[in-house]
Length: 224
Image: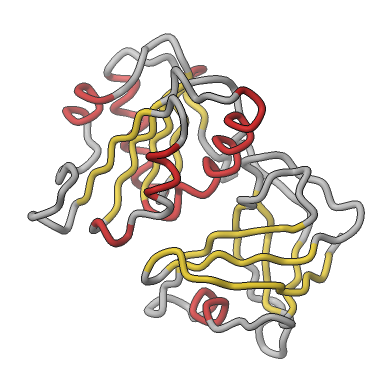
């Protein structure tokens, strides 16, 4: 089943990322970490569906997304960045394999942070603390870090930011590889959530396993 959403608000989060707020359709339910297939509701774009993750909480009266634009790609995210209140989009039923399975280490690359936004927000809202969880978040440069201040302010959450294309950064300047993980991952008896570009996910999962993390401790999206 498809739903038509009306845009209520759009604001920048970073230089190339926007926070979009839509009216929530009646009867539309989802879980933190889930995504939907999203298309612009205008001629020439309705069949160009792309997956985006909900960043609002399930009890909200809005549906919200944080969407990074890639002007050099296929144009969909560039078009989304140009949306204005009153514009409409089309979404399908929610899907996704990433869900909250307890405290652990959240490892994200770029826009791969989005499934973790709602998961961390909901747990913080319900429990008042994210004690026992750590966020390892990689980006190209510091200006690309999505919601940095919010993550740093989350009670109990330990944050590790790293960038790969900026030598003079005020954060780590290292790729998330086996050596970096060995230095920064959290307790080995907890869950490891991984989301980002597919090659990154594959590499991180291999590195985690080589460090002794069991497969059933690793939570990733199911791309099949």
